[in-house]
Image 1 (tube, helix red, strand yellow):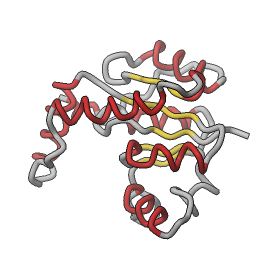
Image 2 (spheres, helix red, strand yellow):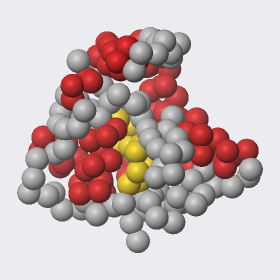
Image 3 (spheres, one colour):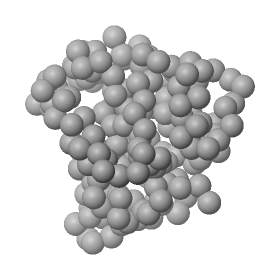
Image 4 (cartoon, rainbow, N blue to C red):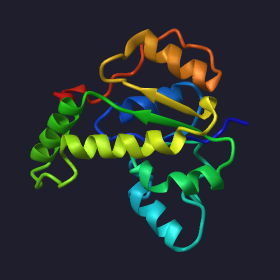
Length: 178
């Protein structure tokens, strides 16, 4: 059976594209929000508060989860879902801040506090530190925004032990990646 795949990296770093790629590879995956309109982060927080598995109820239908502030749940995901794989999507820090700020402007909302280069490095460092003494075959860093293309397919498919599809790697929502 396909292991659970958790995109624990930064949002605004190719998370939609990764989710689409996982679906193309036959791994049912969900991004940011469930069909009933619940944000994955809220569901994860609620389930954790209620002493349930992080993605209880969704983990029956989905094997891949993206864009839910995964760094907040690393210990729980690692222990509740044995043999899972974790993908840190990252990108150039300045581009990440610019993309997040642009998105918040488009949504006409105030820019969140967590939108500085220091916040970028803090999140990435937390994730890298967590995996520093874990097996290499459960953690992958992908820079979809800058790599893309066949190299991203090769890295992802090698990590997941899947054949590389004969199509371009998905590049979703690039207009927000300014």
